[in-house]
Amino acid sequence: MSKEDLIAWRTGPFVDKQTDDYFQRLLVADRIIFIFPIWWESMPASTKGFLDKVLAKGRLKSGDLEKLKKNNPAIYVMTVSGTPTIIYRFWYGNPIVRIMKRGTFSKIGLNKFRWINFNAEEQRLGWAN
Image 1 (cartoon, rainbow, N blue to C red):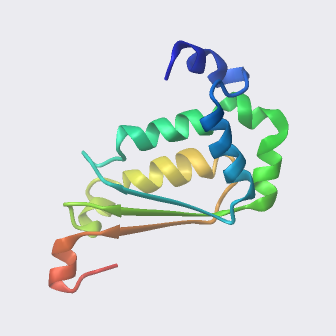
Image 2 (cartoon, rainbow, N blue to C red):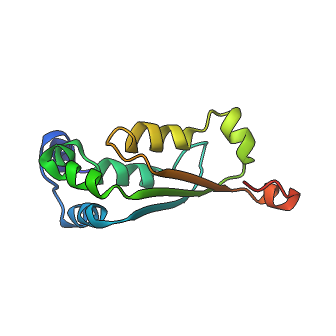
């Protein structure tokens, strides 16, 4: 984020047109789909940065949050990991669901959330979720 992005993050409008375009697309979407690898038991920094910029507090307080909640898009998070899903869920506490569902989307009122993980070892053993 640039200095201007950080200043606008809490209270201001978007600084760049691309971020505003992404937000406008979210307002009319019936599904929001994220696809990324799990790195060090979490999402890549680029995914976190996207959430930070597009779901900025300043924008969500502007009245657009009500439009987004009214449309209520389904959120799909599709990941690939080197850790089997059952271990990821129970040993690591399922950070993707905790961060994205509880920590991001449920906070803003979007509760149609589904996480799907692909692990090659599970596929080989027939354990796929």
